[in-house]
Amino acid sequence: MPLAFHAARTFAALPFATRVAVYSDDTPDLGSFGFECVKLSPADAPLSRSIAQGVAIAMRDDPAAIMIALADMPFVSAAHLSDMVAQFDGDRLATWGVATMPPALFGPQHFGALSALSGDRGAGALLHDAATIALDPALAIDIDSKDDLERARQSVERKWNGGRGRD
Image 1 (spheres, rainbow, N blue to C red):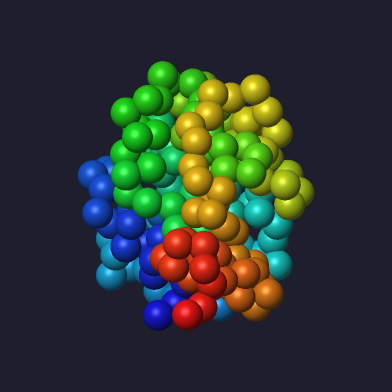
Image 2 (image 1 turned 60 degrees about the vertical axis):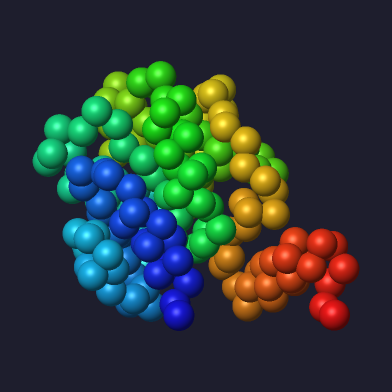
């Protein structure tokens, strides 16, 4: 199963009015999970461009907030996302795993800044003083490479086996 399907399935279970997936050529189609899929343009654009494209689509529905999450963080649970929504005060709320990170919620006063981001740092600069909600670091894994995937597999095995590794 493609990695992005895990995150998409989690979001599909939650009552968000709009779900937008900004994708590249190697991203599987998430339309069957209720996402409006928008191709990243240009294809080699940085992370900031994918955020701007997603925010532009989400803003059509006049949202009270926008949550930014990554498809390559498959262990973020629906419970964590629901807790974020419940604790959101209308400004900003980020996840604290090993640092301030996505998923993150932004109120409307930040939509302009999200749309104006540049470079490959994403929305991190907007989160430096944001409130946070804890996520077990073992679940805050961002999988960008085969090595990351192997570390994630080992982490899951340790967690499921009570820290013993493979039996």
